[in-house]
Image (cartoon, rainbow, N blue to C red):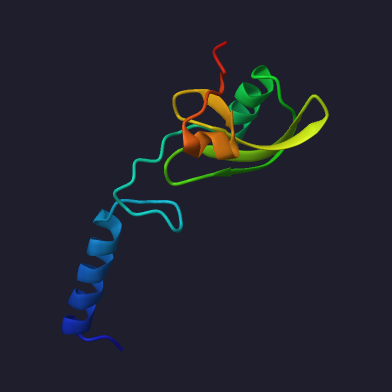
Length: 102
């Protein structure tokens, strides 16, 4: 049986836990995770010319990462929060990519 002190301590811990910001596993609690979905990311990647989009994963930085094909060639691609779809390596080197809005 829990005494009054134990009950108050349990409620205090529960209150602290409930007031903490929610985050995806592995993401810092203060990261702002947007509401974009895998279906939306797939559509943007396909609109940018990629086919067979699969293995989608969203990073804490709101970038969607996937495997896809373009002209029959396998590519690792990334969709930036801005809507730009790029080959994975190019996303980090700053080279041009295709925008989903094109």
